[in-house]
Image (cartoon, rainbow, N blue to C red; front, side):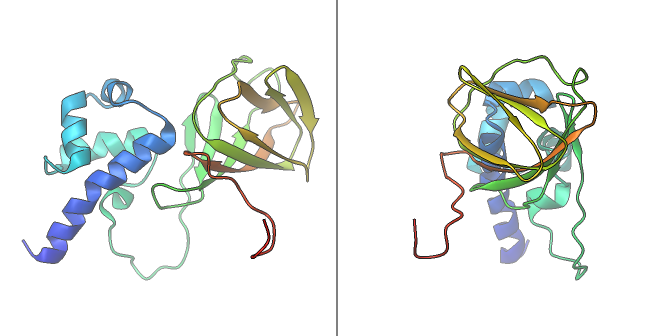
Length: 193
């Protein structure tokens, strides 16, 4: 095996850890989702176990990313972005960033009101910013409730109980930026905070 191939294999573990942490999933939860043991997942993430295709396929499926992303396959020269929507909890999530860790961008489509999951508020580490592209959303943050339409945005600490859902008879489309460790979206010009 060449040193380039060794480098590719060595980089898989940190990518797996970053993907899991970005999703806010524990090793135990990922083990239940993939059928791999938590011990195996831990050894893959730390590089103490070389990944096999049989291990990477369920991990790519669970994280909603192409297998190429897990192994950093070389680009094919095609400049087009091949977005692959993922269905999660009744939502359609389209990852717009292809790198693990840091602030992640998503297009999220919420089903029409009445078709989305119940108003189950969640909390997790991180910071989120969203912009309503189409439709209207009902946004519950702590004890407050907001109605946002196209062109409106919200930014919040995800440790505050929150819920987002469509507020109308049509799906709502949002552009979302999420920072797993509290990174915030900065919209000021460079040099200004």
